[in-house]
Length: 169
Image (cartoon, rainbow, N blue to C red; front, side, top):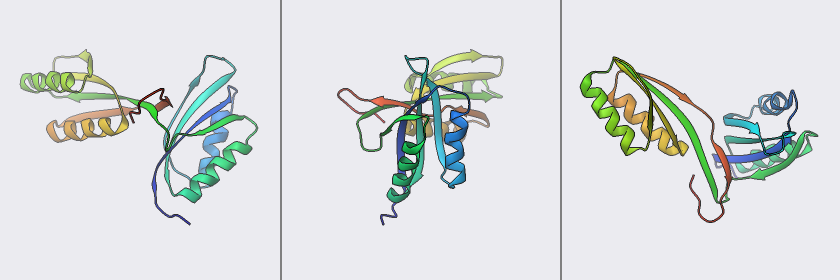
């Protein structure tokens, strides 16, 4: 048994039907597997959705997860992204309140450095949007929490697709 815990990713093609998301998340819950991230959206075919799931587990547990997903009638295809070249991004919104003029200047510089968008701006607050890898978003959140007092964070799950030539995770 390989007991090494690490981040692992699965992409699923599933039937776009009521209850499929609940069934898949229920599988994780029933087996006490943790979902670190879960995103789902319709594909180019409106009858099929694609899910990207991130979990943190050992190899044996991960193999069980894949086998159980493959047994589900609603699951069309399971792709293990863990060791593939993948383009993967996560959306991150950060709202900073109680900003001074100096804080706003610094936030504009941070936004420029991290290629973020300032999507809303108020008298004493700013709302930034980042579209980066989860690791880069982790670094941004850490930086902002260290520098500013009132920080609100909302993250979407990672979305990924197999790379054509180069990987970025």
